Image 1 (tube, rainbow, N blue to C red):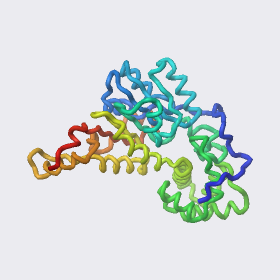
Image 2: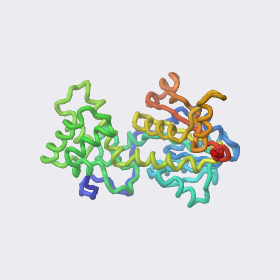
Image 3: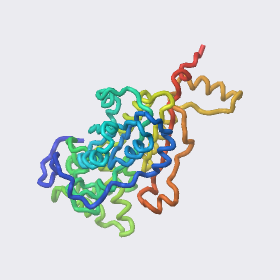
Image 4: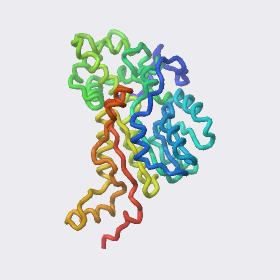
Length: 341
Protein backbone atom coordinates (compact mmCIF):
# COMPACT_ATOMS: atom_id res chain seq x y z
CA UNK A 1 0.00 0.00 0.00
CA UNK A 2 1.25 3.46 -0.90
CA UNK A 3 1.68 5.57 2.23
CA UNK A 4 2.56 8.72 0.35
CA UNK A 5 0.79 11.97 1.07
CA UNK A 6 -1.52 12.67 -1.84
CA UNK A 7 -2.86 16.15 -2.38
CA UNK A 8 -6.47 17.10 -1.74
CA UNK A 9 -8.25 20.40 -1.55
CA UNK A 10 -10.30 19.01 1.33
CA UNK A 11 -7.40 17.49 3.23
CA UNK A 12 -7.54 18.37 6.91
CA UNK A 13 -4.79 20.65 8.16
CA UNK A 14 -2.55 18.83 10.66
CA UNK A 15 -3.05 21.84 12.95
CA UNK A 16 -6.80 21.57 12.59
CA UNK A 17 -9.20 23.28 14.92
CA UNK A 18 -11.76 20.80 16.18
CA UNK A 19 -13.87 23.41 17.94
CA UNK A 20 -16.65 23.11 15.36
CA UNK A 21 -18.41 20.05 16.73
CA UNK A 22 -21.90 18.94 17.60
CA UNK A 23 -21.09 16.08 19.96
CA UNK A 24 -19.69 15.66 23.43
CA UNK A 25 -17.29 13.24 25.08
CA UNK A 26 -19.17 10.15 26.12
CA UNK A 27 -19.89 9.19 29.70
CA UNK A 28 -17.27 6.60 30.74
CA UNK A 29 -18.64 3.13 30.09
CA UNK A 30 -18.68 0.63 32.98
CA UNK A 31 -16.90 3.18 35.15
CA UNK A 32 -17.84 1.59 38.47
CA UNK A 33 -16.87 -1.88 37.28
CA UNK A 34 -13.53 -0.54 36.04
CA UNK A 35 -12.75 1.22 39.32
CA UNK A 36 -13.64 -1.91 41.27
CA UNK A 37 -11.24 -3.94 39.12
CA UNK A 38 -8.48 -1.36 39.57
CA UNK A 39 -8.77 -1.66 43.40
CA UNK A 40 -7.51 1.90 43.82
CA UNK A 41 -4.70 2.75 46.26
CA UNK A 42 -4.92 6.11 47.99
CA UNK A 43 -1.46 7.19 46.82
CA UNK A 44 -1.27 5.08 43.65
CA UNK A 45 -0.01 5.98 40.21
CA UNK A 46 -2.43 5.23 37.39
CA UNK A 47 -2.53 5.44 33.62
CA UNK A 48 -5.60 6.41 31.64
CA UNK A 49 -4.33 5.12 28.31
CA UNK A 50 -7.28 6.58 26.38
CA UNK A 51 -7.89 9.96 28.03
CA UNK A 52 -10.64 11.34 25.78
CA UNK A 53 -12.78 13.69 27.83
CA UNK A 54 -11.00 12.72 31.06
CA UNK A 55 -13.88 10.84 32.72
CA UNK A 56 -11.86 7.87 33.96
CA UNK A 57 -8.95 10.07 35.06
CA UNK A 58 -11.28 12.36 37.00
CA UNK A 59 -12.98 9.45 38.76
CA UNK A 60 -9.66 7.88 39.77
CA UNK A 61 -8.30 11.13 41.19
CA UNK A 62 -11.53 11.83 43.08
CA UNK A 63 -11.75 8.33 44.58
CA UNK A 64 -8.07 7.96 45.51
CA UNK A 65 -7.28 11.22 47.29
CA UNK A 66 -3.51 11.23 46.76
CA UNK A 67 -3.34 9.35 43.46
CA UNK A 68 -1.70 10.63 40.29
CA UNK A 69 -2.97 9.90 36.78
CA UNK A 70 -1.05 10.03 33.52
CA UNK A 71 -3.49 10.50 30.65
CA UNK A 72 -2.53 9.49 27.10
CA UNK A 73 -4.20 11.02 24.03
CA UNK A 74 -3.07 12.22 20.61
CA UNK A 75 -6.24 14.15 19.73
CA UNK A 76 -5.61 17.90 20.26
CA UNK A 77 -9.29 18.53 21.04
CA UNK A 78 -9.29 15.84 23.73
CA UNK A 79 -6.05 17.19 25.16
CA UNK A 80 -7.53 20.67 25.50
CA UNK A 81 -10.85 19.48 26.91
CA UNK A 82 -9.39 17.05 29.46
CA UNK A 83 -6.64 19.45 30.54
CA UNK A 84 -9.23 22.13 31.31
CA UNK A 85 -11.50 19.64 33.06
CA UNK A 86 -8.69 18.28 35.24
CA UNK A 87 -6.77 21.50 35.85
CA UNK A 88 -8.18 21.75 39.38
CA UNK A 89 -6.16 18.68 40.39
CA UNK A 90 -2.86 20.39 39.65
CA UNK A 91 0.15 18.06 39.43
CA UNK A 92 -1.96 15.01 40.24
CA UNK A 93 -2.92 14.91 36.56
CA UNK A 94 -0.26 14.73 33.84
CA UNK A 95 -1.17 14.95 30.17
CA UNK A 96 0.87 12.66 27.92
CA UNK A 97 0.29 13.72 24.27
CA UNK A 98 1.43 10.37 22.87
CA UNK A 99 -0.12 7.18 21.54
CA UNK A 100 -0.37 4.44 24.16
CA UNK A 101 1.80 2.26 21.91
CA UNK A 102 4.77 4.15 23.41
CA UNK A 103 3.44 3.82 26.97
CA UNK A 104 6.67 2.55 28.58
CA UNK A 105 9.01 5.08 26.96
CA UNK A 106 6.60 7.98 27.52
CA UNK A 107 6.25 7.18 31.23
CA UNK A 108 9.98 6.61 31.64
CA UNK A 109 10.63 10.03 30.10
CA UNK A 110 8.47 11.45 32.90
CA UNK A 111 10.30 9.56 35.64
CA UNK A 112 7.75 6.76 36.03
CA UNK A 113 8.89 3.13 35.87
CA UNK A 114 6.07 1.40 37.78
CA UNK A 115 2.33 2.03 38.12
CA UNK A 116 -0.55 0.62 40.16
CA UNK A 117 -3.09 0.40 37.36
CA UNK A 118 -3.76 0.97 33.67
CA UNK A 119 -7.18 1.39 32.06
CA UNK A 120 -7.92 1.25 28.34
CA UNK A 121 -11.31 2.53 27.16
CA UNK A 122 -10.91 1.70 23.48
CA UNK A 123 -12.69 2.96 20.39
CA UNK A 124 -13.68 6.54 19.68
CA UNK A 125 -15.69 9.05 21.69
CA UNK A 126 -19.06 10.52 20.74
CA UNK A 127 -17.21 13.82 20.39
CA UNK A 128 -14.86 12.37 17.76
CA UNK A 129 -17.68 10.65 15.87
CA UNK A 130 -19.58 13.91 15.68
CA UNK A 131 -16.61 16.15 14.85
CA UNK A 132 -16.99 17.56 11.36
CA UNK A 133 -13.26 17.97 10.70
CA UNK A 134 -12.14 14.35 11.25
CA UNK A 135 -14.58 12.43 9.08
CA UNK A 136 -15.22 9.37 11.24
CA UNK A 137 -18.97 9.26 10.63
CA UNK A 138 -20.77 8.61 7.37
CA UNK A 139 -23.69 10.64 8.74
CA UNK A 140 -21.77 13.95 8.64
CA UNK A 141 -20.24 15.46 5.51
CA UNK A 142 -16.55 16.01 6.23
CA UNK A 143 -13.10 15.55 4.68
CA UNK A 144 -12.25 11.85 4.50
CA UNK A 145 -9.47 12.12 7.07
CA UNK A 146 -10.01 9.82 10.10
CA UNK A 147 -6.62 10.56 11.70
CA UNK A 148 -7.04 10.60 15.48
CA UNK A 149 -3.48 11.90 15.65
CA UNK A 150 -3.05 14.83 13.22
CA UNK A 151 0.69 14.03 13.06
CA UNK A 152 -0.04 10.85 11.09
CA UNK A 153 0.83 11.17 7.41
CA UNK A 154 -1.79 8.89 5.84
CA UNK A 155 -5.46 9.94 5.73
CA UNK A 156 -8.42 7.76 4.82
CA UNK A 157 -8.71 9.60 1.50
CA UNK A 158 -5.15 8.53 0.70
CA UNK A 159 -5.90 4.92 1.63
CA UNK A 160 -8.89 5.00 -0.73
CA UNK A 161 -6.89 6.68 -3.50
CA UNK A 162 -3.66 4.66 -3.30
CA UNK A 163 -4.69 1.11 -2.35
CA UNK A 164 -5.43 -1.41 -5.07
CA UNK A 165 -8.59 -3.47 -5.10
CA UNK A 166 -7.13 -6.44 -3.23
CA UNK A 167 -5.63 -4.20 -0.55
CA UNK A 168 -8.94 -2.41 0.02
CA UNK A 169 -10.78 -5.72 0.19
CA UNK A 170 -8.32 -7.01 2.78
CA UNK A 171 -8.75 -3.88 4.93
CA UNK A 172 -12.56 -4.18 4.83
CA UNK A 173 -12.43 -7.91 5.51
CA UNK A 174 -9.83 -7.85 8.31
CA UNK A 175 -10.89 -4.70 10.15
CA UNK A 176 -14.59 -4.47 9.31
CA UNK A 177 -15.39 -8.19 9.05
CA UNK A 178 -17.32 -7.21 5.92
CA UNK A 179 -18.79 -10.15 4.01
CA UNK A 180 -18.87 -8.30 0.69
CA UNK A 181 -15.46 -6.67 1.02
CA UNK A 182 -14.41 -7.59 -2.51
CA UNK A 183 -17.52 -6.15 -4.14
CA UNK A 184 -17.26 -2.89 -2.20
CA UNK A 185 -13.57 -2.55 -3.04
CA UNK A 186 -14.39 -3.06 -6.72
CA UNK A 187 -17.03 -0.31 -6.62
CA UNK A 188 -14.58 2.11 -4.98
CA UNK A 189 -11.84 1.42 -7.52
CA UNK A 190 -14.31 1.98 -10.38
CA UNK A 191 -15.70 5.17 -8.85
CA UNK A 192 -12.30 6.75 -8.24
CA UNK A 193 -11.46 6.51 -11.96
CA UNK A 194 -14.17 9.11 -12.52
CA UNK A 195 -13.44 11.42 -9.55
CA UNK A 196 -11.24 11.44 -6.47
CA UNK A 197 -13.17 10.38 -3.35
CA UNK A 198 -12.46 13.13 -0.83
CA UNK A 199 -15.42 13.32 1.55
CA UNK A 200 -17.37 11.01 3.82
CA UNK A 201 -20.58 11.48 1.87
CA UNK A 202 -18.86 10.73 -1.44
CA UNK A 203 -17.56 7.45 -0.05
CA UNK A 204 -20.91 6.59 1.54
CA UNK A 205 -22.65 7.18 -1.79
CA UNK A 206 -20.26 4.85 -3.60
CA UNK A 207 -20.59 2.10 -0.96
CA UNK A 208 -24.40 2.21 -0.84
CA UNK A 209 -24.93 2.40 -4.59
CA UNK A 210 -27.13 -0.59 -5.42
CA UNK A 211 -27.27 -1.70 -1.78
CA UNK A 212 -30.58 -2.58 -0.11
CA UNK A 213 -31.89 0.18 2.12
CA UNK A 214 -31.98 -2.05 5.21
CA UNK A 215 -28.32 -3.01 4.77
CA UNK A 216 -26.85 0.45 4.31
CA UNK A 217 -26.18 1.58 7.88
CA UNK A 218 -24.53 -1.64 9.06
CA UNK A 219 -22.39 -1.86 5.93
CA UNK A 220 -21.29 1.77 6.20
CA UNK A 221 -20.46 1.27 9.88
CA UNK A 222 -18.21 -1.69 9.09
CA UNK A 223 -16.40 0.03 6.22
CA UNK A 224 -15.83 3.28 8.13
CA UNK A 225 -14.60 1.30 11.15
CA UNK A 226 -12.18 -0.63 8.95
CA UNK A 227 -10.75 2.55 7.41
CA UNK A 228 -10.36 4.19 10.82
CA UNK A 229 -8.52 1.17 12.21
CA UNK A 230 -6.23 1.07 9.16
CA UNK A 231 -5.41 4.79 9.23
CA UNK A 232 -4.63 4.82 12.95
CA UNK A 233 -3.15 1.29 13.23
CA UNK A 234 -5.44 0.82 16.22
CA UNK A 235 -5.00 -2.93 16.59
CA UNK A 236 -1.23 -2.82 16.18
CA UNK A 237 -0.97 -0.05 18.75
CA UNK A 238 -3.15 -2.00 21.19
CA UNK A 239 -0.96 -5.09 20.87
CA UNK A 240 2.17 -3.02 21.51
CA UNK A 241 0.70 -1.34 24.59
CA UNK A 242 -0.56 -4.59 26.11
CA UNK A 243 2.82 -6.25 25.67
CA UNK A 244 4.44 -3.45 27.70
CA UNK A 245 1.78 -3.26 30.41
CA UNK A 246 2.74 -6.22 32.68
CA UNK A 247 6.28 -4.98 33.24
CA UNK A 248 4.97 -1.50 34.06
CA UNK A 249 2.65 -2.81 36.75
CA UNK A 250 3.79 -3.13 40.34
CA UNK A 251 3.13 -6.47 42.04
CA UNK A 252 -0.64 -6.64 42.48
CA UNK A 253 -1.20 -3.83 39.97
CA UNK A 254 -4.27 -4.09 37.78
CA UNK A 255 -5.00 -3.68 34.05
CA UNK A 256 -8.52 -3.06 32.70
CA UNK A 257 -9.51 -3.16 29.03
CA UNK A 258 -12.93 -1.98 27.83
CA UNK A 259 -13.48 -2.82 24.16
CA UNK A 260 -16.34 -2.14 21.77
CA UNK A 261 -15.97 -4.66 18.96
CA UNK A 262 -14.81 -8.23 18.56
CA UNK A 263 -11.42 -7.38 17.05
CA UNK A 264 -10.31 -5.40 20.11
CA UNK A 265 -11.83 -7.88 22.55
CA UNK A 266 -10.13 -10.79 20.81
CA UNK A 267 -6.72 -9.13 21.16
CA UNK A 268 -7.31 -8.50 24.88
CA UNK A 269 -8.62 -12.03 25.42
CA UNK A 270 -5.67 -13.67 23.67
CA UNK A 271 -3.15 -11.47 25.45
CA UNK A 272 -4.57 -12.17 28.90
CA UNK A 273 -4.73 -15.87 28.13
CA UNK A 274 -1.10 -15.93 26.97
CA UNK A 275 0.15 -14.00 30.01
CA UNK A 276 -1.87 -15.79 32.69
CA UNK A 277 -1.70 -19.17 34.37
CA UNK A 278 -4.72 -21.51 34.53
CA UNK A 279 -6.35 -22.13 37.90
CA UNK A 280 -6.88 -25.64 39.26
CA UNK A 281 -8.10 -27.20 42.48
CA UNK A 282 -5.30 -27.44 45.11
CA UNK A 283 -3.74 -30.91 45.20
CA UNK A 284 -4.81 -31.86 41.68
CA UNK A 285 -2.47 -32.78 38.85
CA UNK A 286 -3.49 -29.51 37.29
CA UNK A 287 -2.33 -27.76 40.43
CA UNK A 288 1.21 -28.99 39.82
CA UNK A 289 1.06 -27.68 36.26
CA UNK A 290 -0.24 -24.36 37.60
CA UNK A 291 2.79 -24.04 39.87
CA UNK A 292 5.06 -24.51 36.88
CA UNK A 293 3.04 -22.11 34.72
CA UNK A 294 3.21 -19.46 37.43
CA UNK A 295 6.94 -19.34 36.90
CA UNK A 296 6.27 -17.99 33.42
CA UNK A 297 2.98 -16.13 33.90
CA UNK A 298 2.86 -12.41 34.50
CA UNK A 299 -0.88 -11.93 35.04
CA UNK A 300 -3.75 -13.51 36.98
CA UNK A 301 -7.17 -13.12 35.42
CA UNK A 302 -9.78 -11.16 37.37
CA UNK A 303 -12.52 -11.76 34.80
CA UNK A 304 -12.97 -15.31 33.54
CA UNK A 305 -15.47 -14.05 30.97
CA UNK A 306 -15.91 -10.52 29.61
CA UNK A 307 -18.14 -8.27 31.72
CA UNK A 308 -21.01 -6.57 29.89
CA UNK A 309 -22.70 -3.30 30.91
CA UNK A 310 -25.89 -3.49 32.92
CA UNK A 311 -29.28 -3.10 31.29
CA UNK A 312 -29.70 0.19 33.14
CA UNK A 313 -26.44 1.56 31.75
CA UNK A 314 -27.35 0.61 28.19
CA UNK A 315 -30.71 2.32 28.60
CA UNK A 316 -28.92 5.49 29.78
CA UNK A 317 -26.18 5.24 27.18
CA UNK A 318 -27.05 3.12 24.10
CA UNK A 319 -23.47 3.39 22.82
CA UNK A 320 -22.40 1.20 25.75
CA UNK A 321 -24.34 -1.84 24.49
CA UNK A 322 -21.39 -3.47 22.70
CA UNK A 323 -18.83 -2.82 25.47
CA UNK A 324 -16.95 -5.70 27.08
CA UNK A 325 -14.58 -5.43 30.05
CA UNK A 326 -11.63 -7.71 30.83
CA UNK A 327 -9.21 -7.29 33.72
CA UNK A 328 -6.11 -8.92 35.18
CA UNK A 329 -3.69 -8.52 38.09
CA UNK A 330 0.12 -8.52 38.02
CA UNK A 331 1.42 -11.65 39.72
CA UNK A 332 3.97 -10.87 42.42
CA UNK A 333 7.43 -11.34 40.97
CA UNK A 334 8.48 -13.41 44.00
CA UNK A 335 5.75 -15.90 43.08
CA UNK A 336 6.57 -15.74 39.40
CA UNK A 337 10.16 -16.82 40.15
CA UNK A 338 9.21 -20.17 41.65
CA UNK A 339 12.21 -22.49 41.57
CA UNK A 340 11.53 -25.07 38.88
CA UNK A 341 14.37 -27.38 39.96
